[in-house]
Image (cartoon, rainbow, N blue to C red; front, side, top):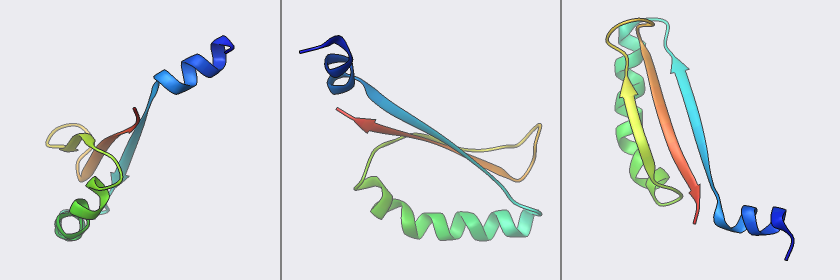
Length: 69
């Protein structure tokens, strides 16, 4: 087995997603929708992080997902 194939079968892939909302009300609605959808999403892959900004860029959510073995 070549080195690239061994690496691909043993490695994990991480996905970082950042969503920006235009205002706090839109952020609140996005969080409400996420509360409904997250159980379905967790069946695909585990979340390593789900964050909401309180300083810096406001009205953002950040998700970190893990794929692979």
